[in-house]
Image (cartoon, rainbow over all chains, first blue to last red; front, top):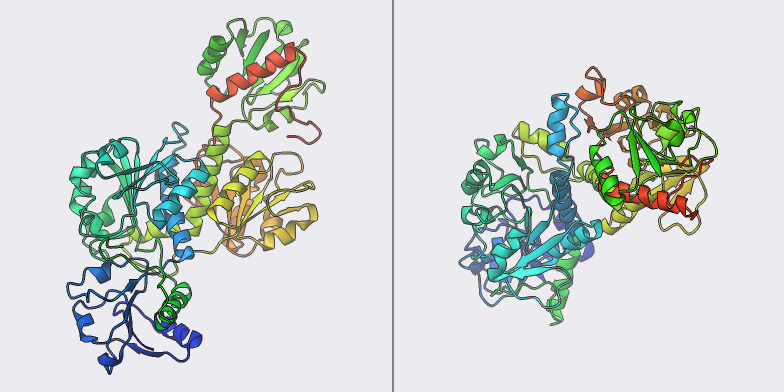
Amino acid sequence: MNLAIIAPSKDVKDWVETFKKLDPSLTISVFPAIERYDRIDVVVLWQHPHGILKQFPNLKLICSMGSGVDHIITDPDLPGNIPITRIVDPRLTFSMTNYVVMGILNFHRQFLRYLEDKTNKVWDMSNPEIDIQVGVMGAGQLGTDVLDKLKALGIPALAYGNSLKDNYQHPYFYGEELDYFLKQVNVVVCLLPLTPQTTGFLNLKLFKKFNRGTYLINVARGKHLVEEDLLTALSEGYVSGALLDVFQQEPLPKTHPFWEHKAITVTPHIACITMYQAAVPQILDNIQRLAASNPLKNQINLSLGY
Amino acid sequence: MNLAIIAPSKDVKDWVETFKKLDPSLTISVFPAIERYDRIDVVVLWQHPHGILKQFPNLKLICSMGSGVDHIITDPDLPGNIPITRIVDPRLTFSMTNYVVMGILNFHRQFLRYLEDKTNKVWDMSNPEIDIQVGVMGAGQLGTDVLDKLKALGIPALAYGNSLKDNYQHPYFYGEELDYFLKQVNVVVCLLPLTPQTTGFLNLKLFKKFNRGTYLINVARGKHLVEEDLLTALSEGYVSGALLDVFQQEPLPKTHPFWEHKAITVTPHIACITMYQAAVPQILDNIQRLAASNPLKNQINLSLGY
């Protein structure tokens, strides 16, 4: 098989070495050094230049280097008939959940308040906890893991998704139950997939439905959030604070108001990072499945967008 | 029954009201307004003036207002033959574990680093996680809950205690296995009871056995920690940082070096606070058990000290 890695923003040296070590028979090209586009069977993508995929006349498989595929399916020139797979990495789930639980507990136990009290040498024992009920938007693999872990911690939590789920193991709301769902919670975690329907979903209209002072955690995609609407929601009290790992533009520009906003905590898209150690074997497995005409693993459903 | 509450540092109005509401037949005095010491059957204590207990000739039961009893058993004039009970509050365990898990996750995901990066508008995605293995010192009810919750989160953790435990549900070390235990971990949580044996247990000799850069969380008692030794251990790199909720002197004096130390996070003894709503019914239950000559609940073993 001939494989091309197209990930202009990434250093893929470790990926190439791991592919070669695990399957010396593979031929690997790294964009832009691809000599014969017509010989490529499989592309491995992270934020590829849109439009480039139509230059591969014999493409048989498209693999995302991460768990998200929005960078792929937003390409208007995406070939419609080629399967797309994504990475499901237990380590990635572990990292994501730890980050989210950290953010939830820091709100619950008011970690930022105590840091500020420390700066001012203030010893204030009053009201040491904020009672919380957590709403997780997005009940896929990542959202479900967060809900499982919160349940183990004894922290009440509910899920919201965009489709009916039968026998889901946590309280679950969908579609028009959004208002009802939001009225139950004072922490909202966004783990939605990025689709045309969820782009800009975290906007002022939504924030106005929050219980006043709700805390927002966005670890999905920057494009879920209308950033200026968050600033309005903070100044008007719908939202009391936010932990954000993803942004419309990354790295976050130095002039962006989030950097200096006291109630917003910014992290540099590190909630989870796909490890090549986990990803490369999964891509190789799918290449072998493709060669043997076996069903692919973690193939995405293009009509759902995830 | 005649009850006296002796807690000079606390506002006990809510306690008195709750006692009266739940058992109108009780007679309640609040120190120092105790008219007839000889009529008191039960004392409810928080940091009572040592020596005062011998003034109660007809005392039948001593109740701690919290989960700790070190404030009682350190009284050199403690009557030896009167049972002592403590509070076991599931809400208290919930609060304590949440605080500890928050501290562990903040170290694991380097929350303080990202806050500093935010102040400096730095976008640095490198090395977003510190791999952790947690050592919990103290495998009583609180320590075990922390270990249970860490296991649910998938975070490896071991326990250390001072006595042999059979069939304990987590990896457990005791006594002279201390060095071996410490070599496995890079986060140490102190949840030991305060006894003569554990006073000053967190000292430089112990810190020198840590893996370099170990993170310390003390939520037990201030007297577990030799505070100047922590400063030495931080400057020499045995310890990389600490989250401290308890101190030798509380409130922490304004001149104390911990306030300004960058690697030490200080909180004002709020990891868990005993709620009168949970505590009063437990004390009443024991008063009824005493009257009926039934076995007391959560009675402490004076020879163990907890």
